[in-house]
Amino acid sequence: MASLTPISQCHTLLRKPSFKPNLSSSLIPRDFPFSKTQSFEHPGMATKSYLESASTAEMPRKRYPGEAKGFVEEMRFVAMKLHTKEQAKEGEREVKQPEELSVRQWEPTTDGYLKFLVDSKLVYDTLESIVEKAAFPIYAEFRNTGLERYEKLANDLKWLEEQGYGIPGPSSHGVTYAEYLKQVSENDPQAFICHFYNTYFAHSAGGRMIGKKVAEKLLNNEELEFYKWDGDLSQLLQNVRDKLNKVSESWTSEEKNHCLNETEKSFKHSGEILRLMLS
Image 1 (spheres, rainbow, N blue to C red):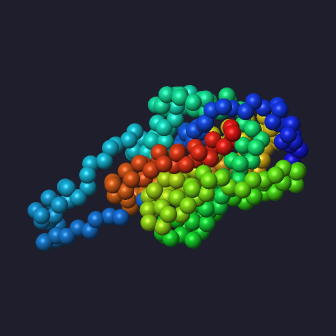
Image 2: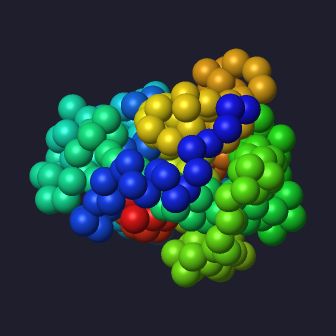
Image 3: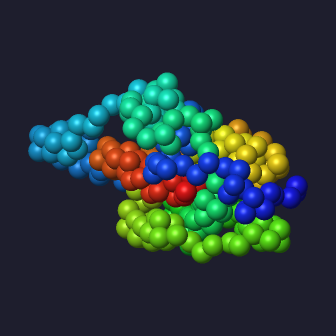
């Protein structure tokens, strides 16, 4: 890798933003988990009580555009709505902070970027450890997808330290998010899958835009391993989409809605970490 501009010099070259960013939504890609048992009195004939209970067993759920394409398309649709209009044409939020503008207008700092990388490493380590342990069998479907980022980040941070940069410890935002992921993974698989999807798919889209921006601004156009994948990224993403759609086929309407409703929390936590980049 090319050598970085020393931190002390970067501080004099970069304008330190005076705003508190909320950057999570810019990372979501544009492409962007039990069933009832039936009882019958006679073969082929449902009882009246069953028909009545079946009609009220689930509350009607909101229908989302693209639902026929699979649950991942619903997840993408909900996530895109949380963008600002500056970030995506499907976005519905108005810009209130500079960080809610297009990534092209961001001004990252060296210190902030190092903090972001450290917290990101903690989050990916947590996600990948949860999938490996698989408290719920469905988690095992997402082992070795090719999207894993922990090892890449560990290598990047090691290289940066060798260049003389002081690597900070995780911030309270990274620690809080990692603990939250551990908690929901133990008793709420639908919520966990929401965070898994948004984290990995966001990085594969908007995350690459950020990588390019940082490379130009701080790294002499040298791209970190964090923004590189082994193999065809589009195929890796499609493989995971297929797994997500398959896993969610057995979910009830309430479980699917619960997963979708978790999207805003995912944005909140990831946004707090992304905010570090401009600090």
